[in-house]
Image (cartoon, rainbow, N blue to C red):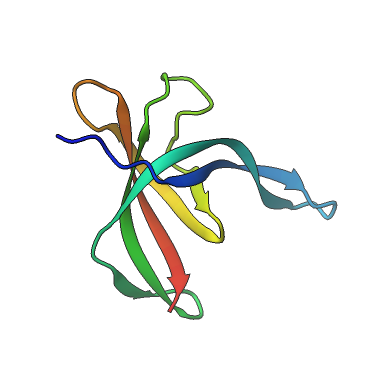
Length: 112
């Protein structure tokens, strides 16, 4: 297996809930770290959202591994951002037995 081409600088973000002052909460995204990564797209599809159709494309995002428990290690429910593009992380696994790289199985959603 060849080494991945880590050519995209992505920002790892985690959701935080803050009180809105009216008894509810607002969700904001806090930056945890940055990762150089390789992005590979899968086959997309269009699904019905609440008010619009949404284009969903699965992605495999490969990046250097971080130790378990480290804030730099991606987890499901976090997201990776590339400029205005948002990739929601669905699952994370080691790329191979050496454990030098992680693969983030993610999804990008954009209005169609």
